[in-house]
Image (cartoon, rainbow, N blue to C red):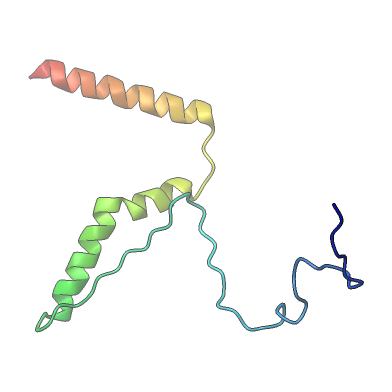
Length: 96
């Protein structure tokens, strides 16, 4: 079965599109992006909206995640830290 081939070379991208202005790409280190939005409700004080935003940040542990990823931690150090944490939890449970 034959098909038509055009004489033009097929390009996967158009060179004219390359130079169009696009929104800057935001690099995130984490696997899941942190898109936290707080919409100010009608007749709501802005301070209250800020408080809701901070509560959402704490719930998703964004600041802790940032601090944890700020420096590289060896896997052996992570395992050791988790082991000590588990040990403390068990000891605390046995005290009660």
